[in-house]
Amino acid sequence: LRPLGALTALPKEMTWGTRLLLLATLFPFVSLSTRLSIRRSQSATSGLDYCKADPGVTPGPLIQQHRKHGTTVIPYFLKFHKVGGTTVMLALNSFVNQDSTCTQCCGQSVCVGQPLGCTGHKSLVIMRELLKHYKPQLLNEDDPADPANLLPYAEREAMLKSLQGEAGPALEYTSWMPASSTEGRMYIITVLRHPMERIRSKYYFNRDEESCMLPACIAKSVTFLEWLQMEKSPGVTSGKSSESCCEYTIGLGGSVRRAKVALATLFDLVGITEEMDELLVSAAVSMGMAFSELPKPDSPEYTQRNNSDNKDPWTDEEWQAALELVSDDT
Image (cartoon, rainbow, N blue to C red; front, side, top):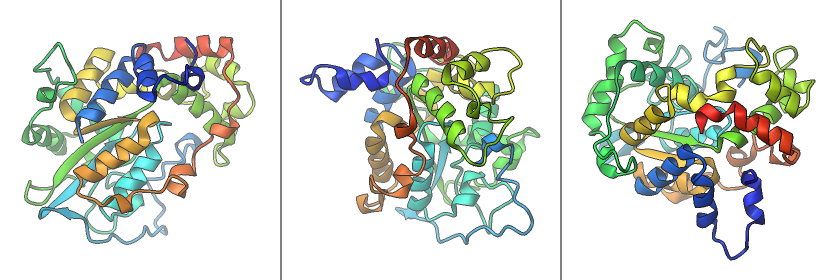
């Protein structure tokens, strides 16, 4: 089978739903997240931590938060790399009228006032620590996408807030959590992408990113195949290897099995990049927002990091090398 882009070459009478179902039979994360999403309605590569702003940096003002039925909806978006997450992050921040700099850093040091959300890559630190302490179980082992598997909100809230008492790496990213259910309700969401396309996007993003320079961004000086071979070699310096090979499993419990359980038991909404419109509409409905507040398909929120036009077609060698590299995430 060819990569995701080749789905367009399938028979015209085959619906896109059928095409994605075909793809899902090969990739369990895509399979589970597709059913879950239907069921439930910048420099990191440059070595600079944008969440530790210089004293002279003044983030934008916080605006009054969105309230649904008298309760603040506070997004916790588990943001993986190169999944279209910036589009989701900006939409969620807009939904709740929050300053992007504050929420993408999960309240770490650059907020004006009380942060009310966690929508950036620091969210991965929180989930990794959470799943070190807790091992959720499926109520229905035969069907991970059964709605009965989603844990009650109070239980999930208690798990997350327990990190506020732990002297671990997640502690500095917990100030956004509501003190009580009367102050706000966390809305837990993530988006996944076909692992092969995610890693290809990472290479082309690093290659095009102006702030990412050699030697950190070795993608600027090697071919995609050479980069794939370097990424799967021990001790490479071409990037964070976990971002290439296995970010889903590392971020969601350490194995495909545990990752699928985490998705089924902890998240209000799980979407896939290939169905971004459906994800954003589902999030808007769940958070009580009008469709008019969704980003337009031609808006910067949708297009600013789209590097599809810069990608060369897959070769057989690249496809095989990438498949081997992301085997832990499929």
